[in-house]
Length: 447
Image (cartoon, rainbow, N blue to C red; front, side):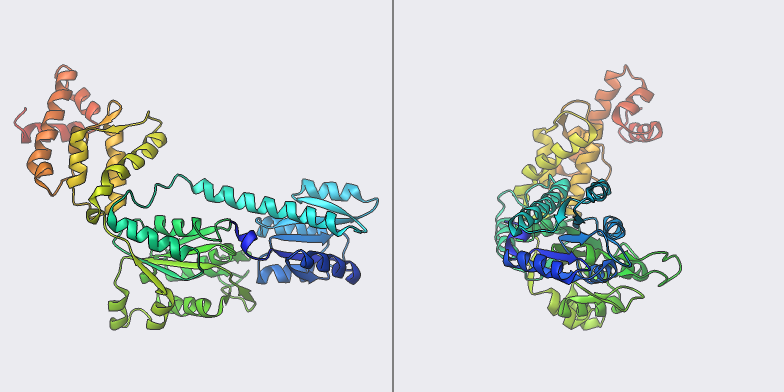
């Protein structure tokens, strides 16, 4: 089910002849679409600045801003919008040129058949849907949220239920626990799946840059603003907006976010024109927003707007049953990215991974596996490969610091044996520097 199947398609008809506009609009409204009208390209651009459209039908010959200029602007500023041009009989060359410039198709005037009109618009909507789907799949390859651990089974059931609604979701949990993966899953399972998924990390930018990134800006609104720029919220129209690290929002931006959540509209930086925002909101944080409210650093009203449906994601150590299968899925992706054959985990590597503390959760697991994949000589990740990672230490007896040291010593001994005692080649084989190897030889009494 797609967004175009669960909500009215938004169309814009642009023509300076009122009779033509009315005929086209009526025929498309009868087919269940939402249709706006504009008498020329200038009026069309004003509407496009306020809300997004799936398809624009525009005459080519119009006063002020003509259809070709309108097409160029749409292709540049609103690339997700499909354009169908309307051309008079005998001006097919202009329509063909418009298609070369990015128009989806053309219709020859006078248009007497509502059926032909609806078919052409339907094909344009289908292309819009497919392009959106390809964009989603381009992110692709996300592993499942969980692999049977009871803690994740309960979370996934909750996320699937809320995904079918338009409720705002607040994802809570430690850093690296998979909050963005959960947000993408909500989007993928929702009626908005064919729309865009747009994510912004509030901790990654200064408040000034973040404001422009979120809301966009008008030309000349600040030094360096040489042209109008649409914000990320605007680009998420019809889809899902993921606001990561929401606890890092500055007070001024908290107020602006509260307004858009309440009124579903906003203004760009330096602008006065109100822009509609048809997006589904998901926020995430690893901070305690309730404590932040008590300290006065996070607005209570904003918290309640965001926490309509709060979900806490368990840490990796709370679902150890998932570590092995999750590691297999991550390792398959890592191997493909490194151009290696499919890698496997040895039994001792599995035991070490399952016992580790994982304060960085899934993100830390992925990092450890990637570094291990680089060290691995064959198709198997062994305990030796893990032992060579200085920050990898388990918190259970079978992966204690002593055991890791023993694994590391064994790996060094085998590397020296394989290279006939050549320490430089052994260091290269182990993927460590020569000085580091000398330090380890001294530590283990192998010098």
